[in-house]
Length: 310
Length: 256
Image (tube, rainbow over all chains, first blue to last red):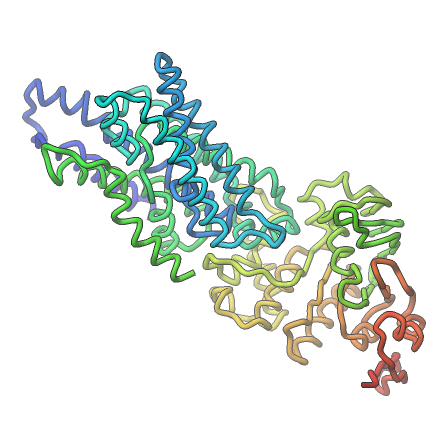
């Protein structure tokens, strides 16, 4: 399974690098084509891989923690929290590049906390309550974002609208380095909690009774998910549904054991977003679609399917 | 093993358990009896630190329960709670192996020993060859036995059981009690169990704690506690008492 996934990742990376509005041949590159390849396309493809891995791992972690296959950073409002943070940084601290990811983490963390508090009740947490809380937080944050965009001038507005829907074209090299380091660390940390998450998935009470430090694990997962979503959103906006689709498919293939689901989701998330972004770049070339539109086109029907099944 | 001294537990301002003491030694089975809402489950939950105690202390092997980590407590105390349901596909083997969590590394895979113990416990609970079945495809009674197998797989010396026979047919009720009894007799384990079946309590428990409104109404050997006046006071039903002709233990018949 692992070699297959790694192989698929390499193939999709190569495909993504050489396909585009300017198709590149493997061996004969002109100077301008080499510039396109190394300065524009490669950083974008690699950023896409990191964003996909981050979102998929965050989704897998949140789902096990909340015992709910519908938990997803975008649907829970975590992505919107990060987006609002990024916007605040952009409007008020635009001179510092790293203000954006930092504000994004804070926004993602605050949104996660808010949804969790709203969804929690004495009787525990049910699917509907969690999804509804996510919807409420998402729409609330969206309206603040809309208010903020009215402060922007028209030229910035279009790129912002694109970014909000999830857009990899505005990523920077620093953004890539940051997401790369964080996704590696985040995946390792969440994988280290995988066995505890397997127990949490069965039930919080059960996990507690059988030796899991429930509060500690919850804090770790919320923190790591917020950081992963924050860095992705700061780099590329809200790419939705990745955290829903990818872990679900992985569970169909290997079962629910998080020791497999988390690392495999990381690789598959990377593959998924890289391929989706290739479609976004080439489908109506030379114009582009936001990658978030592609992932949502696939993800939304899947969400309905999962909701009906549960 | 487990020494409970004058504990009280509050939900908000409301006292749910008041001034309860009990002492659990190796080999002993204590049954908690009482009407619904008498505080039995609350008391049981506090015994492994699941609920904070407002007053009094709980000592585990002579040391305060609070001094142990969750992992250490789980190595010594196993719980059979009323069943939980999961939305994810979890196999029976995975479920039972979760009982080995406190013994292995938090990170990593189960050892061959863990696997062997899990399979043995499944077999003893009449669940041979159930390993790869999915939890959500089992009947209530089968799930209940998987929950027992998981508790046994911990090899903990103390078992806390909350209505362990709720979903079980007669044969499996007997199996459940035999397994718990065996654990206690052969391996010096001990158990606290909640049940509504007065006769099962009489047959299997060494001591009965009769609870009313969060406090202990009566405590002691089954024939001492299961008296007409106690049962009228706690359950408000009239009963007929005699002897089980097979075991010689106290038998309770409700008069409707």
